[in-house]
Image 1: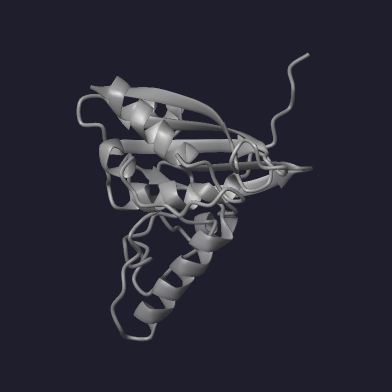
Image 2: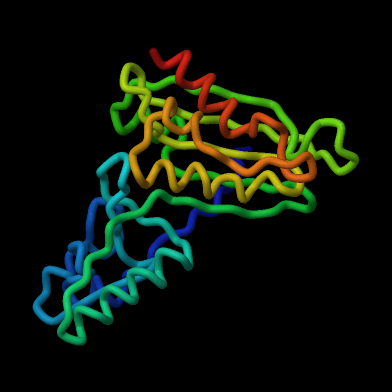
Amino acid sequence: MRPVINEARPAVQLAREAGLPLGETGAVAVNLRQQTPAAGVWAAGDCTEALHRVSQRAVNIHLGTIANKQGRVAGINIGGEYATFPGVLGTAITKLCDLEIACTGLTEVEATKAGFAYHAATVDSTTTAGYWPDAEHMHLKILAERGSGRLLGAQIVGGQGAGKRIDVLATALWNQMRVDELMQLDLAYAPPFAPVWDPVLIAARKAWETSQ
């Protein structure tokens, strides 16, 4: 018996009935100003597409952060000013019991579909200095483009203090950093917060060495 997978889909019945064009993802197609092809009609949030900054493809990602930013852009434009939405990385974080899970950018499956040649580097480490009483295990994966070393995506799974490290990687990804640049970042260190070499830096170094 095959498992049933519940997949979130955009609610576009109203848009379809109104004759608004839908994009390749099945969500409402909009430009960078959140404007649909229909004159005077704007759309934002979970029902619309967005540009993925890494793959440069249209995506439909359901996150409150994206919806709020798109709504602000649409509102500015509707009010007569000018604003654009710069795209998304799909950065997300959640918690399952005591396990923190986070991601940003492309997964291996997505990178392959987008046509990237890449290398995945993985690191097992701790959220604090290993000898610290509250040290939690964490596992981190970084994807780097072969040859250029450009960061493509990252995923983190671990105990308390692991998940929000994804924000460092999301910032690097947003600014199109290479992993050799990422591994030189001056990140904060003290034993209660991180090892001397933060897992992000170790993973970046490993990704750089293997992406060349």
